[in-house]
Length: 381
Image (cartoon, helix red, strand yellow):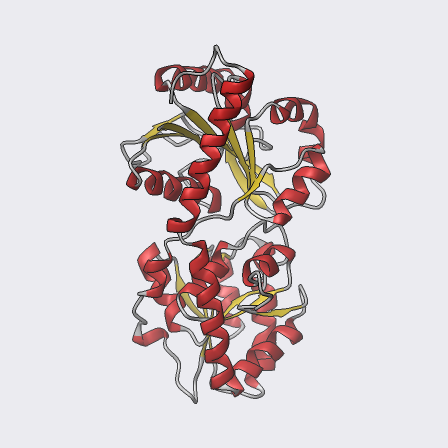
């Protein structure tokens, strides 16, 4: 198939959606498809050959983060040109609830069109205000994917339209399963290591709760080391250091896998706004014992169809309970190893080898739907 994928967020500052789009594109190419990605990006941004850039983005605060989006007449012309030249068998839009390239492509559609909805948000003023512009186009899509039941509930709540498929984000779990620990991040029986990783400048990632748990853990394990990795400002780094944590800084994908495979316990004390929890999948795949906040999205990721849970969950925002979960695992190495094993078994079910074929089949469903309802507009695929 010739597949066009639209990413609404800029590739200048990669986040979860951008990384998912790029990984999906590569997974589909490995399966023999021709893929083109359209995304905002500044002219100096290095991108793969299969990416067409739509120019600079503008930052907009959304869902506890900063979304870098592209909209307007210039963007619309770029989208229409890309769609016409691509002559795609199917077009896959990401986050068409965000006023960016995906919304434009949804309205300018020329053939079979699929959308993936990533966001989980109880209350979104932006989505409510944009509903008149989004919902009619969303109803006309040939297939609608939600990355989790939580994301599906968001679609229903704000747009009154249900997903036709629930397909999780994919992860190259082999890279995490095979990651080799790094000595400086590994703990010992006397000085275990606890880690967190992410965009710590965003309050919703739970850094404050993580730092607040440090004294409660150190009452039982005075030499425990708390590591903070990811992308954050000097101010955040200084705050972490003052709280007694070790600042690791930003890591590339390979080192991120090694980091997660090194720590005794990985913490994800996120406060909300998560529709999937890819960081849980990565940490569990790396063999870390995971302690995470009991968000619906995290619970969905950690729990398999038989009810086996691959992470220790704590009440959202409760640093004392977070510390208690960590202490239980540090006190019992056997229980910690068993939790890590359950987590790894769960994590590998999200590998691209299993997820990509499901996306592929959704494309075929969309092509069949378009052929049925618009037989003169759909080319042979």
